[in-house]
Length: 145
Picture 1: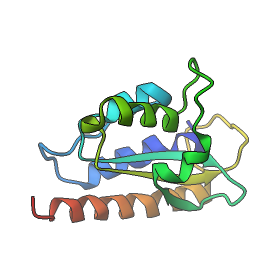
Picture 2: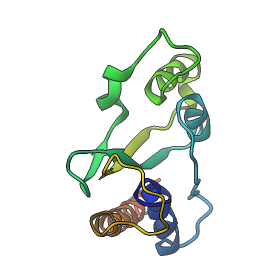
Picture 3: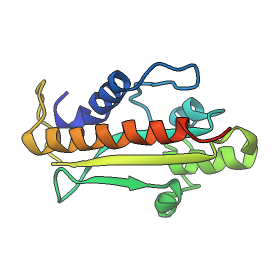
């Protein structure tokens, strides 16, 4: 898996750190576009965790879908990206779109190296993101409903 699999590793670590709850679900996915949007329908809050090719390796960032609006593309129906699929579902089934979608990334080197371990910088970033997400989940749980 190596550095490219850091999103799934962080998800597993956050799952270990948080207490089970009927209103909390973890999904390990390796999908994008329409399939990813279909997986997040009908949830109130969604965290997407992934690696991203970056010049600054080990940087943790948070984005909203709106920050990717420049990637919207109507002309590629067979290769729909996440933002284009999300906009489609917002028009067709707006009541099913999560109220909040937060995208967390860790910057990795673009070279794909197949290994079972993370590089030192990515391991450090994964630990930081794990703690951040566990804290964010607790904040959400403590909000009045």
